[in-house]
Length: 573
Image (tube, rainbow, N blue to C red; front, side, top):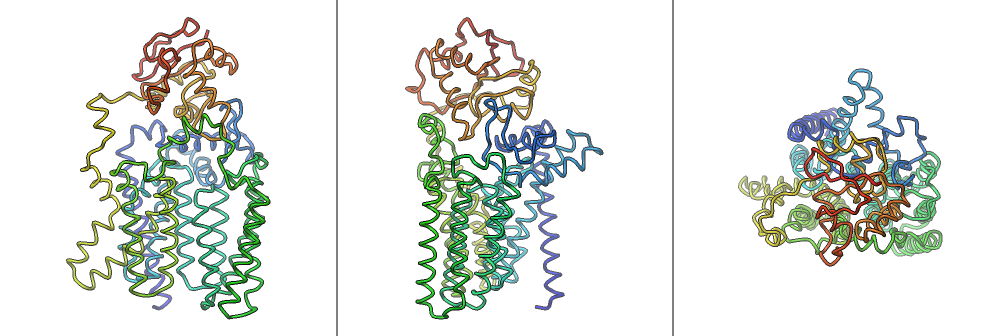
């Protein structure tokens, strides 16, 4: 393939990715316009991300990531890196569209840009392995549920950004082994951990695969491992200086903190050790001993320097771990979910693993083994926490697109048979045909009104600003929609505020009153859908939750009439 034709193919892929991402974003925006127009974003993290950006643009320090209207000032475990482009879009568009219009444009444009990039990267990975199937990969990636859900308009939190970095890592692994491809792998790893640690197991797997390729003395493996080691170490140092927040010293390994930084530097030392020994011997056995020795020393140093990394959520209150964290949907193990959910979340990933294994067996191309390793690790993450399905789905795209190509070359009917397995959106649709035991137990109960609808949030925002005692999930939406302060929100570092919320709603009226006074609460908010995950035995009959649901508030709570359904709020005397 000539450089000119390669450029034409690249620009063709880019145009197709941009056109398809824009079309889908338009359709999704029209469908969700009622929510988007009010800036009621899809997820609690998206709402909090928007508020973090607003606070920064309003004068809060770039390095101060605390949410000062949450529990008196709560240090977030986030990064400024995902804030940069949305904030830039808001600043650039405000003079033309006004602040609300600029924010609306930003929360639609940024996920669309990332989606187009993900489609393009999926095509480029596929073309390295099946040169004629890039356009098919664009379509397969556009259907790659559940990964596509994090690219919807309004999804401005970091998960879509990390999927783009994961695909960049995959592209670097399947491209020819050079210093540049190794450097890209290291830079993508640093950028990902600077944003969040969800992708860490896959990043470790990518580093292990580079080490295995070096042990086997594959062509260019020496240069690639050196590029990886240099970019990883240098990137960590740059990120440690440029992205070091005021929460840098938080004593946990749950984000890019000094604790994690120490462990990451130790791991980078292992890669550096291998790189320094890259030219000592071409024999596999000595190289394997060197790699095992460097990896073992690096692991031991990382554990010694940051033992907290063995238990990232070790600081969370045990009561909160039981009542809340173990019931967060994306944190559930896959086996604990209903069969329909398992099929919908993991169906595409499993199909991709099968396709990648078949491609590797058929071609004996080691690049397929790189993708297969990443997919298997993503499946392992999903077995522990279902959030891993968002990482496994895009990794399935190249193998499935290549398998469609192989089937098409054999027979057009074979290709038609492969397409349903490659279309990720088919799996949740097919799963809907299965009986849902949770719905069977619930019967035909009417839908429950929520207090995070645009109308409900507008009604809450109309109240004089104050501190609201509420369950965890409404917290980020209230912060983004009003000037109120909240005590609880679904973030694991907010031990004190979240425990106060559960103590309030599950406590007796005198105990709840003491909690409200201690936190200077002005309002108490309860929604029709609040705390529905609690079992009946976890809700004492005289608890505030039961009394408020039965509209039997104690005398120190004065009901406030609300026009929005599903919202029940009381003023604390």
